Length: 322
Image (cartoon, rainbow, N blue to C red):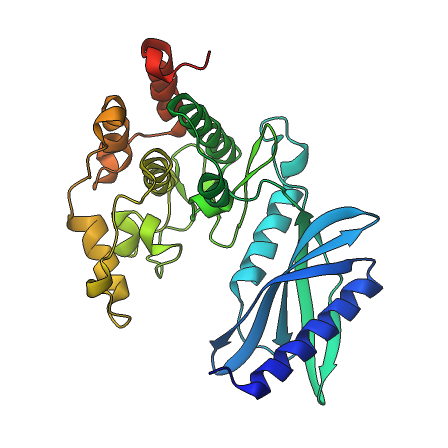
């Protein structure tokens, strides 16, 4: 049963945040998400609000943190990464024209019952079609349409790699769809890479980041994310796009919250690569090369994946759009 005191707290947070957004010209339409997390014994709140400014719809990802916070959140990391990309001329580069036009809310201080909280966040356009995950849930696509969509997703990731970054959390919910374009979203796990070698600038062991169902085997072993780990996650995404479910799944009876990480690690590191259904069997070689357990056995770059997909479209009548 929900704690009434928590309900009151959340209502207060919504009112304070909406008031601050209104002062910055954004009229709140709907709170889509509100959650909290505990870091180093400090509580912070995160929310996603749909808002309007001059009759244009936006999504605002925001957080409330103690003013004397001693930690960085995932939204802090995302904001820092977006600002770094913008400083590199990301949104002006012809090599990556399909970047989302992010803005940032003005940092402000909110008083709640005598406590001082800092409000920060980012602003992005509202995509009416939503994420790829939502799109696939709402619409039924033909095989040719799914393969064309796979090609668009691949080109989107390729453009990111070409400007010297890896995403680190490729999955259907992080692709946003416009009428004729695909965009990548959520930059909390992104990192710059050394273009000449396709590896991260920092090669030290790291803690596991990203979404467990899409993480490459080497990520479970503490390796830093690379182009190849993005390709692995893309392979999981393609399998889900074509088949309608993930290739690796934990059964309900296997769920153990204390051992989730080790259970997911076992699936990605030890289970064989699942086979596509018969109607998709011509694309099994692509999945095999994307989901190879060893990095050296995977595709080396997204350009090669795109070429393979284009070849299937060219040679297989069943995948052509007429």
